[in-house]
Image (cartoon, rainbow, N blue to C red):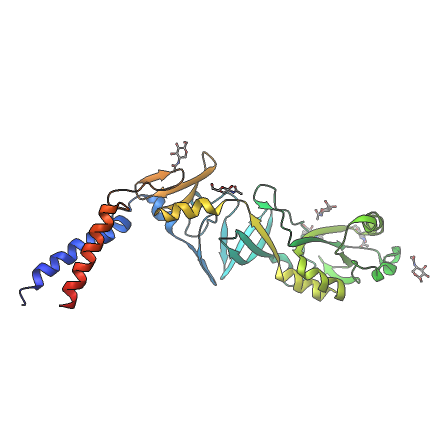
Length: 291
Ligand SMILES: *[C@@H]1O[C@H](CO)[C@@H](O)[C@H](O)[C@H]1NC(C)=O
Ligand SMILES: *[C@@H]1O[C@H](CO)[C@@H](O)[C@H](O)[C@H]1NC(C)=O
Ligand SMILES: *[C@@H]1O[C@H](CO)[C@@H](O)[C@H](O)[C@H]1NC(C)=O
Ligand SMILES: *[C@@H]1O[C@H](CO)[C@@H](O)[C@H](O)[C@H]1NC(C)=O
Ligand SMILES: *[C@@H]1O[C@H](CO)[C@@H](O)[C@H](O)[C@H]1NC(C)=O
Ligand SMILES: *[C@@H]1O[C@H](CO)[C@@H](O)[C@H](O)[C@H]1NC(C)=O
């Protein structure tokens, strides 16, 4: 055996301990480790705070941001409606979702309005509410309305085995508002769903149910309130982001406990002495290897 093998081996062991210890061996805080795991489902691979669910316990995310994975489809339930998650932009805090119950047809069994609550999502300028009317009587004067911009042609479908006639309207402002509330008074039900503003033009041009179906599959964008900048700071300090359910506020889980914002730097962690030691050891190891 070459004599230089033994010293080089011990340097390797020291280097291993010093370089890896702060991130793995000392990471024994259970909350820190469980909130370090990210959500994976279908095409989604690295979903973290403010979301929780699957591998991330409730303490790792914001209330109301639980995700579920259903046969590779990432889902979120917002106020009794389940949505398919189409895209998540963690930095811009934007969620793109589409209603699951409107995936294949525009006449689901249970008619439910989309509502989002005022404390989770902010009003997004990129979406606009449309309203679907169900169970209307076309003989009550509605048939003559479909030349009006913003009112669709009638569609027909069946709910619970009953054939019904419906319409959708994309505008509900000004004179059209009072006008329509009277005219659609004959309808048995209505549902309000926001769509992307950029899709409204196509709805108004085509006025049919298949266009509506496509537009509902594109979904809508929601900007969420829980602040990503707090989490970025926490992650930058080596922590994992979470939520103190007792206090109802953000919390940063670190390998040695929980902190309100970020992990304190420790001698073994981010101190200049540690970095210096790490650099010296790394170059020493490199030197040994190149021998
Ligand atoms: C269809 O039937 C279910 C119960 O089977 C009921 O809850 C639902 O409200 C009905 N849908 C409509 C639009 O009447
Ligand atoms: C949806 O909201 C509108 C306006 O508030 C209401 O008139 C309608 O009945 C609601 N529809 C359902 C299914 O709850
Ligand atoms: C509205 O609902 C009532 C009661 O379910 C039903 O009798 C009526 O036919 C419905 N109206 C239309 C236009 O479908
Ligand atoms: C619909 O329009 C036609 C032709 O303009 C008119 O004869 C008819 O009375 C209108 N129907 C209703 C219910 O207003
Ligand atoms: C997010 O947090 C940052 C830093 O604490 C703060 O400056 C900003 O105002 C917060 N934004 C919101 C929307 O709460
Ligand atoms: C959350 O806050 C409460 C009250 O200050 C505290 O007792 C608890 O330890 C905190 N939870 C965590 C995980 O730090």
